Length: 157
Image (cartoon, rainbow, N blue to C red; front, side, top):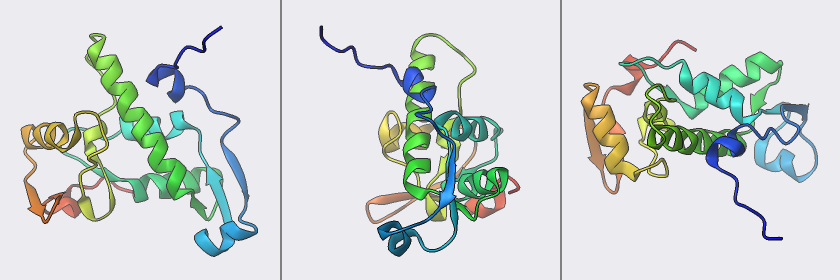
């Protein structure tokens, strides 16, 4: 029997046993450093992204800091946090396409230094249009796009 592909919403709610909090060991120590790391559940990342109100922004690093504090860890996994934000964004776009009005405002979640995430639904054009509609100014630097003065609009950590 062929396997059916999971929807983004199903992926968002599939925790795969996370959150997991454990010391960093072995080869991971060279990449991530010493300490205790949390791998959050996708819905935890989505919950934080949902709290960002119009006119405010958050970065993946701020999400990671909140997750680490919540779980008593030194830091949250950068890789899975980014992946889970991507899943949350696609689940929100899926919900919007199904007619839902209140979705996770994924366009307000930025990469480091205020960079727009081109891997979110609709790419840079969609994220940029949504941010500009909320009054943010977007600047292009080379091939990348950033919210100007994003630091002034960040949510409190």
